[in-house]
Image 1 (cartoon, rainbow, N blue to C red):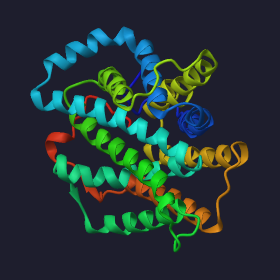
Image 2 (image 1 turned 180 degrees about the vertical axis):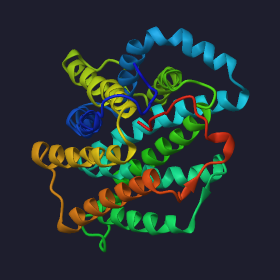
Image 3 (image 1 turned 45 degrees about the vertical axis):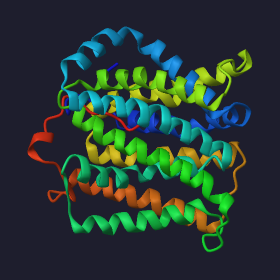
Length: 318
């Protein structure tokens, strides 16, 4: 699997679009599993399958882990426990408690949360104009999250808070991954993330008292969940990024929320109100505009300190 990106070779914008569209199919596999199985059981088996597939890379990843400093080791553990096991458990629980569209689209807020985490953890600078993107995006998320944004019920908060919790943890994982990737190749970071996440997922399963056995009838769904919006989409995404201009990749990534909406509404029968569609459009448009600005503008809204500008590879948030 290739986890580095470059600029040489044929443009593969279409491949980035295919990969992010595969992320958008997550609800197609996760929602049925979340309604029939405890979220901790789904997350545990998802990690088991992915770790088995990444097993050939484990020795090299372990050597890389032993070679890095204490700060990077702590970051890897936090990524595995928080951004892999706990975040995925929250994300799966959000599907169980709410509709299949909102949890996915709320993940588009990760760049907003990542900027705040970068400010705190990496001492990156955020310019005042960043609020011109962040505040409307948060307002759009509010409209998307609630069918009646002015008449919120307590029961409606649970899936939203679960999805936002997952987004915050995944955003923190992106920032910590960026820090670790200065000394550890991204392929090894990804392998370590799931390897550390597996015992963490097992611990969550134990503490919740959920069953390990899930029945063979759920095996196809679990394998497809781990492969399609999981490892296969991740691999295609990095292959595409290696030869795709960043500005076009930003537009190609819009296939993620578009597919999420098509799957949620067209296949899983979710119904969104007019204000939720307004919020959906706002979140997608504003975050896409932010990504476009950061990739093509000479004046960045978020700038990294000099020590953080030479990563060994890039690490995805998912």
